[in-house]
Length: 463
Image (cartoon, rainbow, N blue to C red; front, side, top):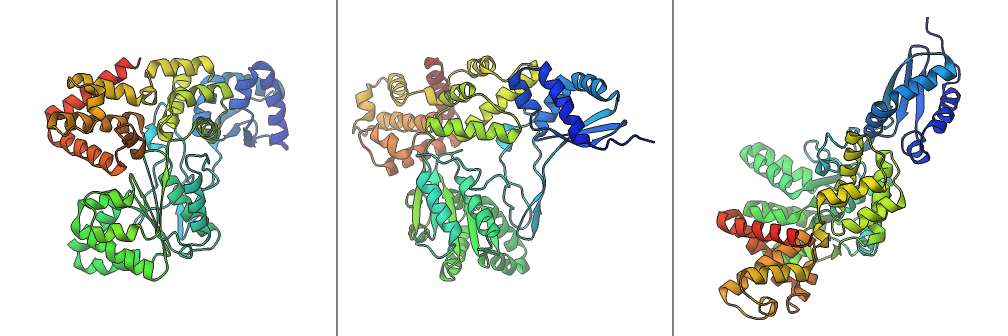
């Protein structure tokens, strides 16, 4: 019969003191300080860790040491296993499945923050709360308006609220934070979160089965809060736009809250019906811009903490200076760093961070607007003055459009900022240029190769 350990936590604390004497202070802080035990006897020791990444790292690098320490402190040789300490969260009537972190070298960084799907709508990502959102000058106003809406859904002047900006800046985070906050504070009962493409798929499926069109309309039009992600994709279907128009009207007339995200201001979404544009600007449209350095460092610390490790201020500052335009890219670089350390059995320190930066090459954010303008102008045998000037010849216009597109995709600059660097052009002109290049890129292989070659050249020149 197994010998029960009466006070496993105290015994583990003794083991931790032993371990602390054998490893570096930062290693102890990263991998052991947040551990505890849920079971400890002569047959089995179950160590609780904050993430699957921590479990994989400790098992690979410290298992033998733990076995030795346990023997020294208890004269026992139990099997050792690890369990991630997380509890499921609920939204509405649905229980959200626990999102387990995977070792960084096994997962796709882009999937780390993806939403959890459940029919007929999508649930909310448990991490996308106001408490987890890092506030800085680039997003302070958007955060404030989102919180105001969450506190009084349907009762403020911000209805609808449209949050717009580039990829990976936190639009979806704020969108879903509104849902979490309103539900957790009993301010709304039915919260529907849906990417616009999902809304479109649901609508098409309901058309295929005429009996379900009523269910579709009832579901979306009975929401207390409707959260719609990426409304720019509504332009892909006329019938979908018509259905969304009536859904919008039904909710707005019932004083229900509507919140949407977009990659650009709603009034400048080419292909969107004017009647929808007019309704989208009834409330408030607010932008999120690229985060400043202090915010980037805070985001890195928060991400590392959530993964169950700690990074030094030096490492955070180095990564924050390297990636400047995109939160998702910033977090992806941290994941790459953790993967590198795990695979090569290195400590997560400044030396490892420097290696990752050198391996990745220059960050797109290190490419300047002026460098892209010069490179594109040279390729088309133009001067930079001609490129940013008022000339409307076809070759000049094409070069200008490509330069705007590359600045948007490589640096992530806001449309207004790009316009200022091209003779103080209006941001709607920049949006049109970017959309024009995107459409031609998809349909003209030779043009796509030209854009890719210029992109590669710009990156090489910045090294």
